[in-house]
Image 1 (cartoon, helix red, strand yellow):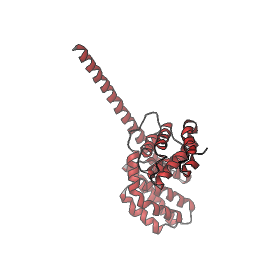
Image 2 (cartoon, one colour):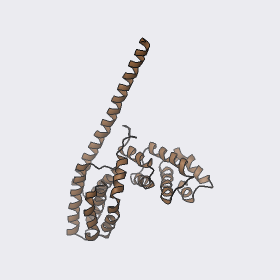
Image 3 (cartoon, helix red, strand yellow):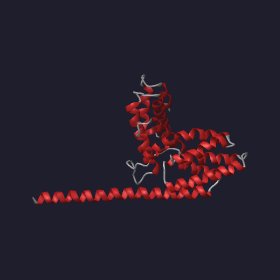
Image 4 (cartoon, rainbow, N blue to C red):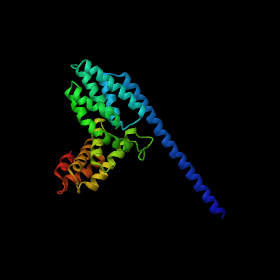
Length: 257
């Protein structure tokens, strides 16, 4: 009986400390995201030209939907719109607005739709008009993307914040989200091994059973990522795709190195 009580006590203590660790990890990710948001809020208001565009692109790729950050981006986007309309021949102002409206749409908020739709008919820049035309139907898609990126299931304290965000998308059943993750990884110059391993596992499971053109496209992007950023660890998988006579030619192309 005494032995049983000791065992029970040990299990209780173990569970208690495991729970504390989990709470600590959650607090840690929340603190890191708060710091990330604070940096974005400051930079988007104070930077200009290339640095402004870089910050806008980082916000777009972050999957954040924080309301306070959204309001700051909204105000900065509308400010950029006014500057663009007052100086329609200024190409830098058009580039700024192009990046900002993408960041604005990336929050997936339905109340941004009217402004974005208005850009299609009022902007003096073809690039801005085209960007707005592509963005306004995608607001729900961005909302869905953000929900997955904000899931902390794959979060680890020693990893970059984007790692668990990429994991949520790569593990998704939606090939458009998978492809977007791969594109963003390229834009950021790579990611961490956890994501590459997930891509490798998906290729092994799905390369022989293509469901659609978009599914094929997302897998081709995975091949491209592994060949470019982590060939040493995933060479065997890429070779198996190259050497399999049943592999789709598009996969063979991007699995080459």
